[in-house]
Image (tube, rainbow, N blue to C red; front, top):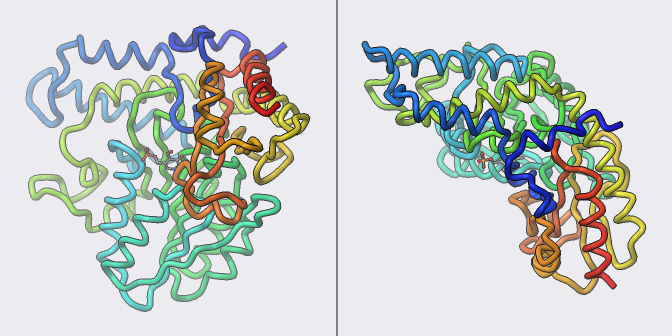
Length: 389
Ligand SMILES: Cc1ncc(COP(=O)(O)O)c(C=O)c1O
């Protein structure tokens, strides 16, 4: 029996009306996260941190609690946890600060497998500072980014390496620990975009050894928020763009404006949910659904699965094309069957061309989440068969 067979009951929005394969773009929210955010807003604690009254203390406590929970979820020192609005916003803030350290002659390595939030902020920084960005390519036939592809670009000029923990379009998982090692050998720092990895694998930042790790709680059953871990020593050294009244040390320097307390309460509960259920159990259950989906798509005529054709060692996310349909036409036709999928590049801008896709239109993307069941998969497969034939 599927170990997660009763988990759907924890998601009020998963009511069988729609088969939801849009999780890589944002999952539905778990009951405890919904309640935690609502409870916070009912509690009277909606204030601000660093005040002299009970509600202000409650805000301080919430930051400490959410940081500690995130530290446990990611295997990371909570002193480095920054609680921000989104990963994109966090990356813009980070690269703006790093831009004060780099200039002509310095190099940053990004990858073609990454979501644009781990590429464009570096390109913009390069425009401002004169440093150079190089892009490491993945193997289009396997969809895999090898350690060598990054190592070949690493030199004594490399200052930063920015690499995804898992592709948000084809799910492949680079060896970020080995890539970190290669970068550290020349004294470069490493940012791992963990947004697509965190919902599908047990993360251990200490074991990866990276300097920065990012994730977004709306991809793992929580509210819209971005969490960025920065190695605490590095965090204090970074010259953040910040307001004068804000502390000169610690995560507050990157927490722009008043925190969304209700989101913090919700993300804390969502992280506790992942810790309670266990990422290994989630990954095992998702792998079963993913194989069913992949095998089912392979069996259909007029359907091309993009990138890797096997299900091993990847997050349960894939792209496919339906002959005779543009990706957006296919997604609309699937929506008529109440099957929710995304279409387009899904911001993995540099991955489209190597995958043989129109860079603008991309393909259809379907992702398995913890709440996906066999009936959902069969509904998607039947809908694809209906439109393809
Ligand atoms: C792999 C990956 N990185 C980064 C992001 C950006 O996250 P956010 O929307 O929190 O800025 C996404 C969002 O889709 C993503 O899938």
